[in-house]
Length: 217
Ligand SMILES: *Cc1c(COP(=O)(O)O)cnc(C)c1O
Image 1 (tube, protein in one colour):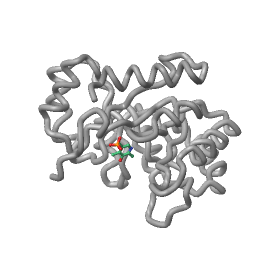
Image 2 (tube, protein in one colour):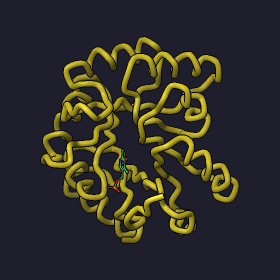
Image 3 (cartoon, rainbow, N blue to C red):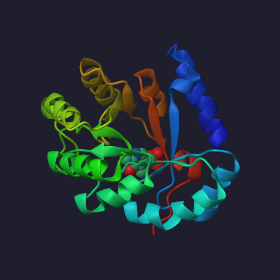
Image 4 (tube, rainbow, N blue to C red):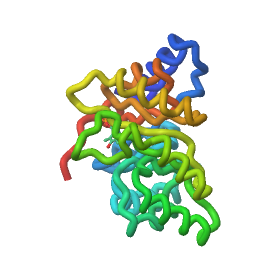
């Protein structure tokens, strides 16, 4: 699908939910996509992208930034503390703050660098063992801990379990965000972004629907 088609679908979903079109940000997830495909979307005027891995992002985005002004880069994959500095220097937004150790590292580096990307706290809404994120029952405490460290927490993020109805997870994430006065909700991917928008998503992360199937590297 073209990026324009996805934008139309986002606009329609926002309208159906009585929300303003511009209350939903489209993050085009360009991980593992050939550069030509990413370039085509940049040429079409889109500037907001998502990457999973710091190393991959560092390999392609500095060059793209030189050629296209105003790139807004979001890191949406698990972040190791030893990559935190590089992540902060590369990205405007990090969606995967998921543990106290990373929070402390980001806070220390933010002091040192003098700035910090906007942050989303990842919540493991499905309580899956192999998945990153704080457990729902620990979310309130972790949000408070991040705020006490002066971290700029913009909202929450989740990746629902593949086998389950995502709407339940989106609703849970929205509920945790609301009771913590957080307005950002990073949820919804290619298969379910319209349902996420119906439940309040402010950031949808759409990859394969825009770029086509990912080409294994
Ligand atoms: C890859 C990825 C996406 C995009 O997935 P699609 O199904 O291709 O839209 C969204 N969020 C995260 C965290 C991802 O890793």
